[in-house]
Length: 349
Ligand SMILES: [Mg+2]
Image (cartoon, rainbow, N blue to C red; front, side, top):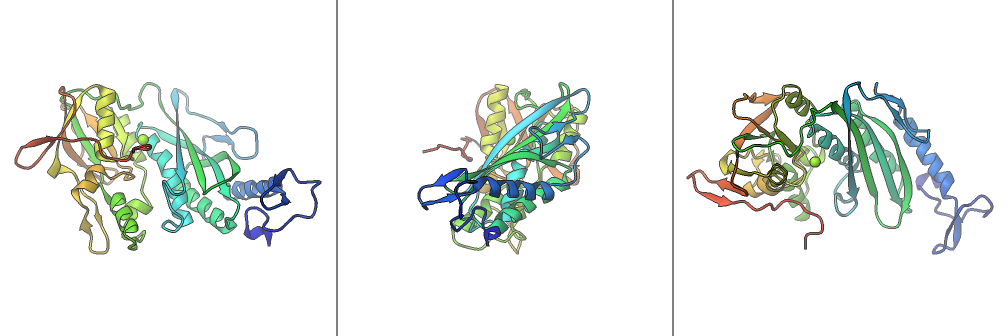
């Protein structure tokens, strides 16, 4: 009976071995035993380690072996129920997948290689264990595809919805990480893949329509562009890079700000995602401002040649960096208008 829930749904018989008191329900809950069983289950599911992992789940700390001559990359990202996902919109597997891609994509955006992931997970009392199993299953399927170990984390009870925090550790050869701050006036701006697919799916879901993982794969199963990031790093092509998690307009503004320059992009050049059964192109504003596409946006000095495709993914030239601050969006007639960042931002009124 109890295995159906993360925490016991009925009073436990004795207070002696109980460590936490649930006042509202008026009975003692044996949370630690449940937590232990949960961690054991995650540990079994996470078996199989990457070459960089010496010790994973089960000790006080994980031990990672970072290649000699490399620097460590660290990134953390929240996935919060109601903010980043909804249980009625997203299957547990999709929530797990999307939780991990946030970290993998950040490592890709530095030109690095991911090694291990750490998951801190707070779960509400009334949540079926099957949801947790499927969430971990989705997260691990993406982890395995990129040879990343789930090497540790923490669990707790959440007073509200599901709260997941993913931390990913990666590495890059010393001094070779591609930052946001290296863009120079004249550098060309490129983007991988196609944009706006994730935003289009969210519009469908908000409108109460169905969006299936098959028709909107960019939203449900985005792919981290690790091979592309590594290629740009190894070939010393990119002067600055960022992953598109908040939207093109916002993420390009981040590069401009950190590099102390401006940009000019051609509106017609922005590659728009095709979604739905008929393969319809998304609206220009979704491609311009929609977040969660996890494509890479990067700049390259103009004397360097960029392949049209990297790791089988199309790469599109959007425009160039300029000395004048701000972002200018040019239309086909050559008329420019100022582009304000309108992508995702927390705490926006
Ligand atoms: Mg990022």
